[in-house]
Image 1: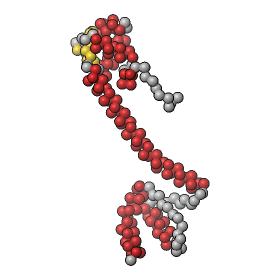
Image 2: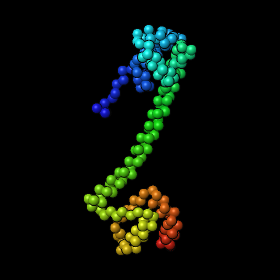
Image 3: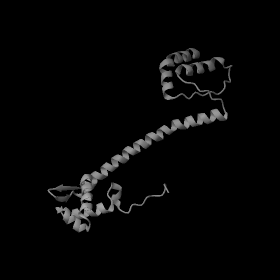
Image 4: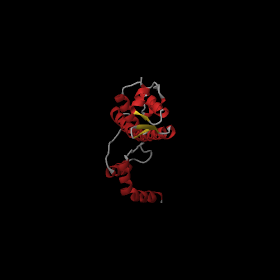
Length: 181
C-alpha cells in the first residue's frame, strides 16, 4: 500500500548503495589498496561481477582506483557528499511539489466556479479581459437600483486583474473621490 512506510534493510540503500555494494565498500575500507582479484576473493564472488560493482562505487565517488588498486575514500567525506547530493535532489523535488500545491488553488477555483455555474446556486457569468470586467462592473453599478444592491462578486485571474489595474485604476479612483465629495 502506498501510505505504508517502506522499511529499508540496509540504511545505505537510500543513498543508492545496495547491500552487495555496501559489503564491497566495507571490504575496500578494510583491505586498503586491494586489487580486483583480492576483492573478488574477499567477497567470494566472480571477478567480472565484483569489477562491475567496483566501477559503480567509483562512479558514485566512494572509492578510487589507482594503478589497479582500490582505495576507499573516508566514509564521512564520501558518504557525506552522496548524502548532500541526495538532499539537493530532495530539496528540488520539494520545490516542485510546493509549486504543484500552489497551482492547485487555481484548479479549485475553476472547479468551484464550474460546479456553481452548472448547478445554479447562484448566477455565474464568465467574462474575459480587463475591458469586459470594467464594463460588467460599471454596468452593474449603473443599472442597479438604489440600495440595497444585489451581492455581486468578481473573481478575475491574475492577468485580467493586472490589465484592469493598469487600464482603469486611475479613472476608478477619481470616480470614487468624486462620489465622496
